[in-house]
Image (cartoon, rainbow, N blue to C red; front, side, top):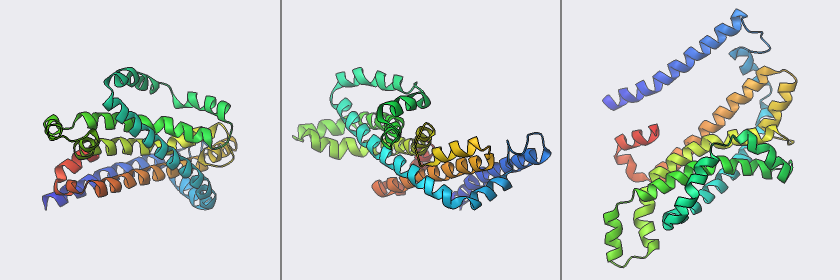
Length: 264
């Protein structure tokens, strides 16, 4: 009963905060402090969302494809790099500071270079998503590998286990919570990275749609795109949560740990 009340409270608090934000937004828009074409009301945004939904959905499908492919490639790259850095200490010492430094470069500054090098096709968009998403997964996996029980590793080594078996039975299970925590962050970045890359050129995608409606001063449609990006990002994060539940069924018996992972 206590867990149910806590669950209801955890859902009601953000819902109440969201409703308060909507009311504040509606009040500012209705007051006339800001011109209506610059700050449309929530009602205007919802109307624009419904009226132009077929067009939005077509552009969103392109952006989601770019985001998913970039996220997949970024995850594979992060997995290979994390395994290599865990295996070779000197490689970690040489590469990890460069990876951290690379995250200080704004993605909006990288995007024009990728377009210049790769053209206006899908390649620069996927490349930017890869750059945006691989870091949280790589660092999470590396921390997860280091969190493996050293006694268990020593025991398997004393029994003649190979590196592959040690990885499979000790290091990989220990790294799974860290992996999915990083993957949730990367999933939230993926769609945003795809949209940013589409701002600089292309023919389809939510970023291209935003550029067109911005030039037409249709800010209600711009807010509709933002809402759609938020919805898609939340759905991707929810998908990662479901994958974690399937991959780590033992967490179902430990609700406290599940809640801690959700807040991480």
